[in-house]
Every structure is written in structure tokens, then in C-alpha cells.
Amino acid sequence: MGLYFNLSEEEREFAKQKTMFCLIIYDIRSNKRRLKLSKLLEGYGVRVQKSCFEVNLSRNDYQSLLKDIEGFYKADEEDSIIVYVTTKEEVTSFSPYHSAEKLDDILFF
Image (cartoon, rainbow, N blue to C red; front, side, top):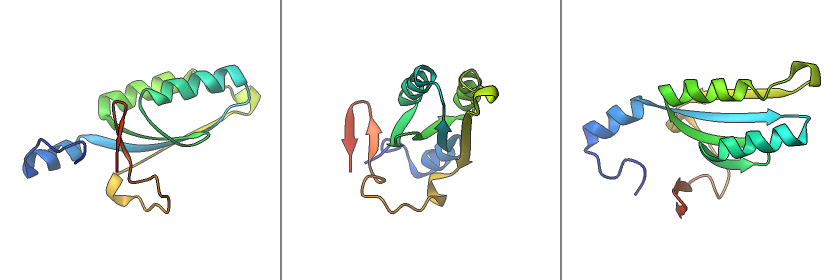
């Protein structure tokens, strides 16, 4: 199954071009800001490690997420937030959980 299960092959390819696969990694000193950032990111994607999320976004959602994330960054506290953008097809994973896809509250393997 998957995210594009109800689309034709042509529609599926078009939809894939309109989405961005992002890996968001962060190191936030403040517990309060770190918790708020993790709650925000849970609304966008799937946590793959303690401070690492995978998200699939449209370009508009990506720009919105970047604006939201920027408010959590404090240079004077030596915080770090890194967003890698790629396509899902370019990802190589050695994790038993990587093939899981989150749809609402259901995981499909």
C-alpha cells in the first residue's frame, strides 16, 4: 500500500515530484524548547531516533516548517538544527523500522 495507493502511475510520479523528503536532526540545550520542537515535528513526520525525524512535505509545508523551526534555534545556547532534503528513493537504510509508513495512527509494513 502506501501514500499514493489510490493514484495512477502518472499521478503517482507527479505527486512524488511535488513532495520533499526531509531528515531533521536537532540538538537543543533547553529541555522545554527541545520538547516543543519534538511535538511540532511529530505533527509533520515520524521520529526515527531521539532527536531525528523523517518527514514528507509539499514545498509550501516545507517553507512553513522552516519558519516554525527557526523560532526554536538559539545560537547563544549553541543549539543545532539541520534539515537535509532529498527524495525517498535516494535513502539507504539499515533499520528494521525504516520501511514503516505512518498513516494517521496506523503503521503499515
